[in-house]
Length: 207
Image 1 (cartoon, rainbow, N blue to C red):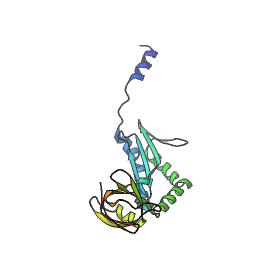
Image 2: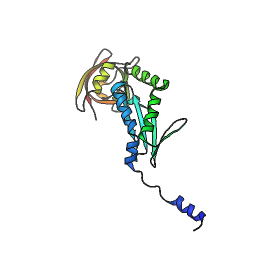
Image 3: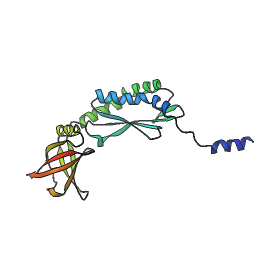
Image 4: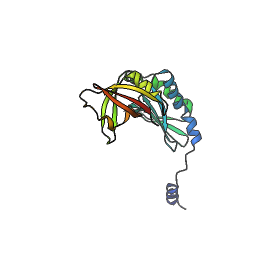
């Protein structure tokens, strides 16, 4: 077999399956970073991994508002090496090197500014959707305190709420209301009623 044929043979060979154990070890600093952010930085944080274990995304969001999450760091892992997406790309071969990159990253002004924005967003009211059976919705205002209380409910638990309608929103058809969707948290609507421009209801946490 000459060189040309050998090169063609190698090109046609299937890619070996990823080994999840080195990948899990090499990106573990990202998981620890997310846990530290949730514990001390007053933001929501989680690492979302692809099924094949090759891509790992650090997502952040304002507390109790999972719909507002955005990706802060993306790590790709293949053949025992990792790379942090960005300009420039950062390559690493072990957990210590990724830890060093994260320590530098978290001290940068852009990351600190993002944390400040997320903390501020957690103090703002939420424009929640009172969704009807036909998919349309009426906007109502959920206070930061109500949003936190709703997020602490377990599936099947309920909370009584009084939600003022958003400015310019018409009065809803109460019989058609089905789901309260507030920044990604969903609740079944029970026993809705109107008092002026305020909707009173029981919100039951959905899975």
